[in-house]
Image 1 (cartoon, rainbow, N blue to C red):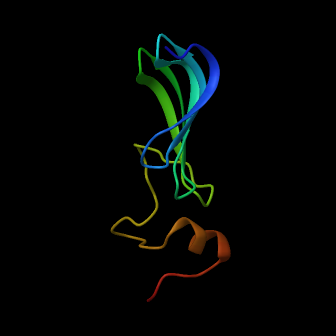
Image 2 (image 1 turned 30 degrees about the vertical axis):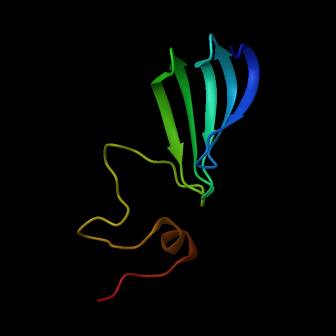
Amino acid sequence: RMEGQGSYTLPTGTEYRGALRDGMFEGEGELIFPNGGRYRAVWHRGVPVQGKYTFADGLQYKDKKWHYCDGYDRRFYTEICSGLKPPG
């Protein structure tokens, strides 16, 4: 079984880089998705116990107080950073 620091590429093209123990993700590691997104987490027996997702454009996902593409302002993060104003 996989053990120590390393990388593993899943059939979907998603790559895991980080700590492995007894063939599972264990400790600090990161999933790198083909679209450029990244999920950095602390893993325990293959399950993330704490993590943060970052989109390909650098926006970090927040499960609370999400201000992007909501009912009030439908712009994306890159549009807000580039200065594009909402209609109206």
